Image (cartoon, rainbow over the protein chains, first blue to last red):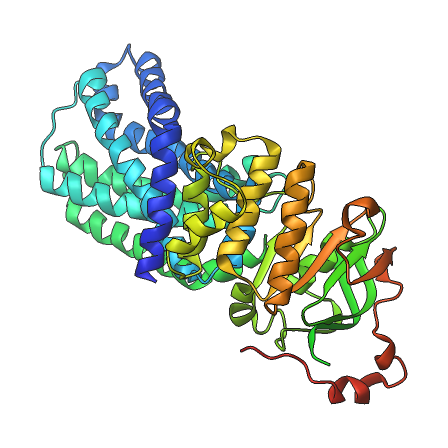
Length: 222
Length: 235
């Protein structure tokens, strides 16, 4: 399974390395989203600073949707998914590989967006450990749920519009918990951020396990 | 007589629409069986059923001695399917595409180079992203992926599409070669001139059924005869 995951992740990242869709399109899109939030709340700077973690994670959510759609358009555009289904690859390995590739792209994007909120919203970074750990766990949750739902919708003609509709409610707990963990780390709330991290970890673990167990069936539904 | 595939009363649906409407078909080991028929006759669906990618609503199917859906994990690596689409990643080079197919089949990496050479892909054609290759070159890359995997059952949907005369001849030669080594080829086409010199047997599809799919020696026996015939089992 791990060997298959490495193979698939390597393939997806090699494709991204050549196509640079995440770098040239998804990244700038996420920054534009942050910029638009900045324009919308410019009159109320304290509100903007207070809302920065939430705006950050909403931007990650939007970008994550694009990243998983892109990840599965690779498989569906020329029918490569049949090759995956006829291979000896473990479906769980394919799932982990695709999720890992999406997660890695999201981590790079989150670093970029973190710089974005510092520059645009004047956010002062603090609580680095909580920021980093909750960021990684949230990314795992977004990538695993995204890949599972993208596989589910891959065979549908309306997948481009259906996927956001299906995925946004599933990712809502991740966005909520990640926002609260970050608010705590940035001293914008008095909540215990590590408690939110536990909740995040639970959701990420459920999405990860659900994807590993169900991905073979999800691929069959295409 | 050994069979590579046997379908009896095979019905496959897309919603309420029948893709296959009761197919009876025998495929003998080592033959090049051409399935002819007009567009929409069900040729592609038949190939997908044989590959274990399209489930049957009713009827029986045995492919290489296995049940296509129940034994999917054992069967699928033994089957090579080339559909209308080539199954390539546009941003990987031809070589990377074939190497990925070989690695995903857990086969030695060297097979990729040999297969590319056999299909006449060398130099720049190997190093270019698949998205920048011509239609014929893309077809050959897809065929190289199949060849490198060395499937026992080749399922080809209009494999000559996009190939020039030289590479059509190369493909015919290749298919005869793999059959002489024990593989079986089922080839769907609606263009007779492309395969008439290649086929060892032809069957005709129309309206989701195969009109003449049973081997003559099978006709009278029904289920008992079906049991009596040795079905190739490579599992």
